[in-house]
Image (tube, rainbow, N blue to C red; front, side, top):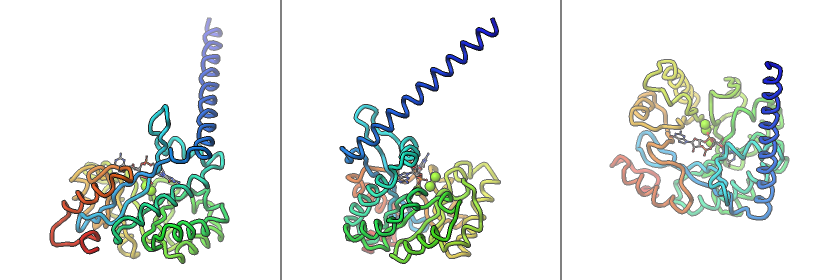
Length: 290
Ligand code: C2E
Ligand code: MG
Ligand code: MG
Ligand code: MG
């Protein structure tokens, strides 16, 4: 009886796994097809980045979405790892960067655009050339482009990776360390390259009001940024309370649903104007100064 149950369960798990593998293959096929035949189903949405001091937008982060004909919007967590595994992230990353540069070229001249780069893109010998081309083709000044990398880029840090980062910076782009504190964080990463910004992961922001440990970590990171001359951006700010605590810790920028969710490109002007008019009077943000 027990043996039969065991066998039944094994069969059940095997079916379950076959089904998962099947779904993965299906998604993989659709990803390949979409990228090749209908690249417009990949949309870049934008989330405003807000200066803590003025509460005015300083730029926007480009976040990729897949508008699937049957399944609706598929979030990046579901297809970027897949694209990385099957070698499509270089093409998909180029698509995102080119769109983001083109869109940003149409915004007020004080606004930056931040684009996420996958660690896999750093293995592509054409990366720097591709970024330079995207800037030239869009006419976006390099100083308005910020490239976000994760600790994964520096994990198997080689001379080549560091050289690539320096070449991107030499183009005039800014480099931000994303999701700080969630990966195999090492302070030595901060010595290996002069980052312009550290983004504090949402995981540390969430319980800022109730967790003294998280508050201590955030305080340490913003202090480090201040002393090393880097900007600090907190992700996932959803409440005024979180905002006030980050302000007290001298965090320089925030992003989160408190100000805006990521929106399609067509909604960017409306969102920016709403945010700019809600910004603190007297302290001109880039929109008014522009
Ligand atoms: P990320 O770069 O850390 O982006 C921040 C994520 O937090 C976004 O999720 C954003 O929508 C979400 N977020 C922002 N504010 C809040 C908030 O207040 N509350 C909550 N709960 N979430 C918030 P999203 O858009 O699903 O992107 C997930 C990840 O996918 C990104 O994390 C990034 O690592 C990756 N990704 C997105 N676009 C690209 C891309 O073009 N290239 C690459 N390589 N990765 C990308
Ligand atoms: Mg990011
Ligand atoms: Mg992040
Ligand atoms: Mg994050």
